[in-house]
Image 1: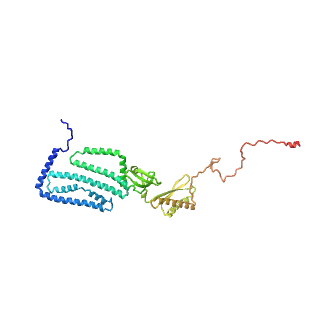
Image 2 (image 1 turned 30 degrees about the horizontal axis):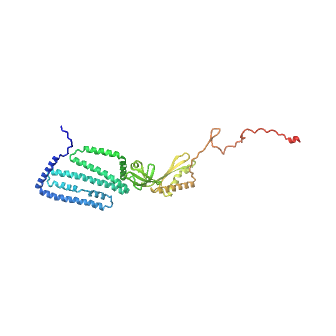
Image 3 (image 1 turned 90 degrees about the vertical axis):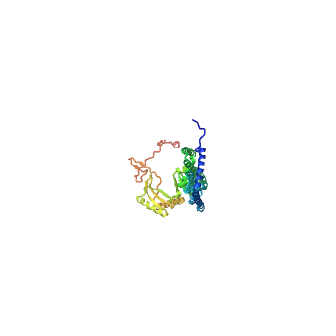
Length: 408
């Protein structure tokens, strides 16, 4: 057995030369016997090529006449304008080859070349439509140009690599090449690259998710986690948010999408809720009127009353809840509505003599018979005052002798 020192080519040079020579002789004989059909087919093919060329110019016109630089007319027009001359030529030849009576070897060669042209042309069209769709969505949502330019550069590279890799595999498969090893190698290489740049790709795909799913756009006021602010820019890796206190928050796109996001700009209204605590000696008849009082005051302020009623027994109060809506989603209107209604409720309760509760504590003492009494009772009978015993009794005083009287 002889060991081979070099890899053999897929098609040996001798076989390739023989096939080329055979194709030449067959083509020569075909042109001599079918020259009239070939001339007619050539004329028809030329007409088809010119028609396809005119269609490509139509794509250029769509790009120029489109009202938006990222409109769908521009997207499809740009895809049509990327049609290659080789593809148009092979389409024309493929369509007229049957009429010209091309022999099997010539027809096989035409089919092979047409397959190559069609596969790579389809990859070009798919790339332009995918990238155009992304630009259409981003332009319509007013994303920042700098971030979009950076993102589109990487997206274009990834889309081009993926589509042309698939096209190459399809072409090699049509050549009869075993592409199993190539597919496996590309898969392993893709996994290695994905693991090495996992963080970048996570944020990139999160940015694409923001672009297409549109949970928010630039200028929206959002709340996420324990933070809130206005979206200033959506970048390739991170989103910049201006917080309500003025500082700039920079958060990775993936981390942002992992949180629950509340888009305050898309609210139809803002709901305001108060909990009012009344003193526990408020008469039931007065508490029956609280619902109507609150409704009157809220509607007098020009706001939408939702509900009001008894909520719970507090430690030192009877608690009532009231809910009403501001007229729109603007935070300033919400703030002003809360202020106006709050003061209106206070004024009305003061006029009605309804007291708000505050934390209180009452101490009781035990009477000698064991019952609980207040520290003092105004109705208790007066008790005789007992002598106070503040200390030991005073010492007895000794009788003094007036010496002057004795001496006198």
